[in-house]
Amino acid sequence: MLIDQPWGISAYGHGSVTTDPDHAVLRLAVNRMHNQPDRALKATKDAVAAVRKVLRQRGVPDTAVTSSQTSIHSIWDGYGADRTFRGHQCRAEFSIRINELDAVEQVVVELVAAGADEILGVDYDTSRTQELRVEARTQAVAAATAKAALYAEAAGVALGPVVHIEDVDPNSAPVPMYRMAASAADAGSTDFAPGQLTVAASVALGFSITH
Image (tube, rainbow, N blue to C red; front, top):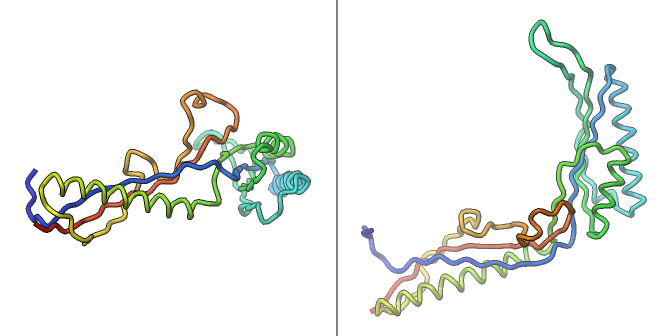
C-alpha cells in the first residue's frame, strides 16, 4: 500500500485492566393486566410497593433504586374484525444497585416472589471505572510509543516528538472496551457468577521522524 503523504510514524496502542466487580445492577419489571385500567394500575402499584418493601428489608437505600414512570396500554389479539380485547396492561421497571454481591441471587428470588414478574438483566459493574480507564489509557500510550520506537529503529531513523493523538474506540479493537471476562468453563453456567470486568482503552499516535 502506497503512502500518498508521508509524514512520520503512526502506531496503534491498546491497554486493559482487569478487576473484580464491586456491585451489581438488577433490572426488573412489574406487569399487571386487567380489563379495567384502574384495577391494572392498583395491582401494579401494590406489586411495586411489595418490591420496595423487600429492598428496604434488605437494607437497600431508596437512592439505589431507579424506577420508571408507570405506563399502561391496551392489549389486543388478532387483527381487523377478528381483533379481541385482552385487557389493559400496566408496567413499571426498576434498576437496583446491590453492593452485596453474594446476595444477588437471593434478592432476585425475593423480588420475583414479591411481584416482579420479568427479569430484564443482571449486570456487574465497578465504581472504579474512571480510575481504571486512566490506567488503561496510560498503557495504550506506552504500547503505541514502544511500537513506533521499534519501527523507527528498524528503519534506521530516530523517533521524533508526538504530532498527533487520536482516541480510538476499543469496541472496534479485538478487546471490547468494557466486557465481562469469564472463563470458558463458566460460559455455560446458569448462576449469577460475576466473573471479572475488563476496562480497556485504545489510542493512535503519530510521531515525527528525524534522520
